[in-house]
Image (cartoon, rainbow, N blue to C red; front, side):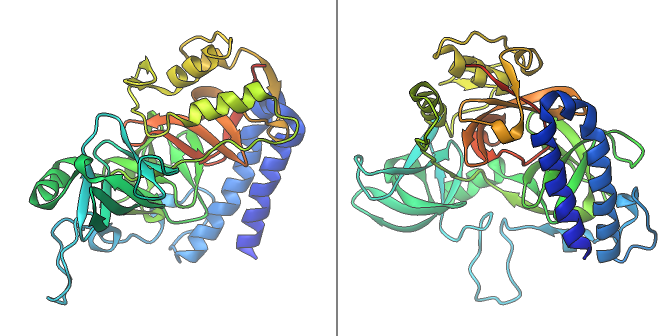
Length: 363
């Protein structure tokens, strides 16, 4: 019953955003969020059998030891001596040796359909090799890449030691990201299950993480830690739907063509690196919309739309409370494309992976 209540609360918050529109969302977001958050915390406290109860007890939930919490895959041997060594989860590791990203194709041929993008320094499992192509698997992507651009063997193992990052994966329905490592501070946002966050600093009770291009803190029991390399990202093509103009379809397709590209704070180059607002600014400029290089500034352009009115090509803004710090392009089917952070670069995400503040339509 608790789970059903929390899920209903989350749906209610999304519905309220759709009905009230972005202006009301700014005024209502904190109130709605608090209600869902209180129910969520109660559920998590009960499920972890914490010693105390109430809506502000993340840090007092049952602690897990470092050995329980963290998966150390570099050079780790299983108790079974015959099990193969894995490197960041890969038995036959390959690492992308490119400046930007490597296309992952459905078949071994340069004319084959692109099914994903393997970013620079990303890891993959090499399943088989033939005629200058590797059949690989990385993240949710499986396909073929040119073997000339993949580092393997001992060189890949050595490089993985330098490239690996500690990642916190959300292991519950939703969780708070807080401004500071305590329960009395501002809640920056709520993120959803299975979201992967780069760890800045580990602690027994709180983990400092990166959320897009800002830092926050998450209560340690609600994430699993692992050492990982960057992964391939699925390549999504824009779907042409009734009511979506050719210009918006083209805009989304152009934005998606840069998936796998680099994130550079303050960057404005689609080929050499952009930040979140640099990405939206440059994509919109190609379709006659002039925007400032600031996510907060861009939120003042166009016209407001609710989440229920979203169309491909609209912008979605995120942040804390009413303070905007991140922007993305809506691509349809509940997804966005955005320049997320230095680890992931330009990628496709669930549009509600964190709480939106407002949505704007530029044309």
